[in-house]
Image 1 (spheres, rainbow, N blue to C red):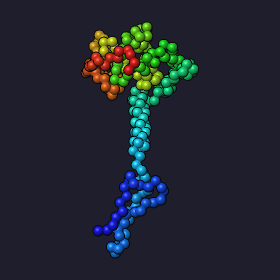
Image 2: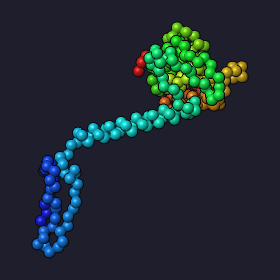
Image 3: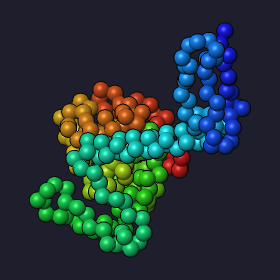
Image 4: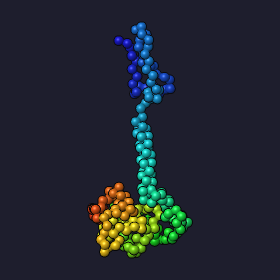
Length: 229
């Protein structure tokens, strides 16, 4: 049997000198067979460092995936990524609402103080939950009509999740200025018949909120209680 030098990872030297490589005995009359081993692979195994590096890579991939999903959702709803949501008073004062469509005249260019307050409240509604126009109106000491008007002109959708607001009857309600079954005398349309309403239903479905074929919320436990998650 040829004599073989066995190198264990735990016994690897700390120096940069290459270790003795495994080889067959010259006395065997055969050409030595040498296995090339990278020096880095023989250095002491640092599991903690490797796990931390793996966690960083995983977090970066998840972050990139989430950004891609957000961009896809934005394009799905309004055909473009919404502008960044300003947080400071100065940035909000300087903000000008973009036109809803290319070439369209800008209407109500400035976001009102009430609208900013409403948009901030919407950001506290967690994914997978919905609220109603009436509940938001109550929290803001306003009216459902004023809430609906502010939601129709929301330039930050879907980042500011106006799609999470439904009617007090738990009907899907309106979205982007469209209201399915608006003519009550004719009866409510099937859920998703309107293009924008269908997009709202799909966005909520992706977040785990389901509606029946008539457009009503299936699970009442999905209603937001008005508290931060």
